[in-house]
Image (tube, rainbow, N blue to C red; front, side, top):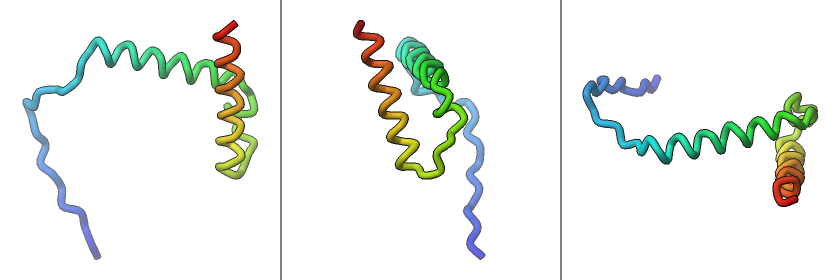
Length: 70
């Protein structure tokens, strides 16, 4: 039985995160998911196939993009 070796926690390691870029990207991602959940078919996920679900996500993204352009 293969077992992955546990890594020791590294305390005190500096973060490699730009706070300003993180905040702007996080708000964009949260806004995107907020817009996507307005589509009931996507938030409940009626589709069983991943390809069909991805197609509906792409259609929703196109609709959202067209709304933003107006």
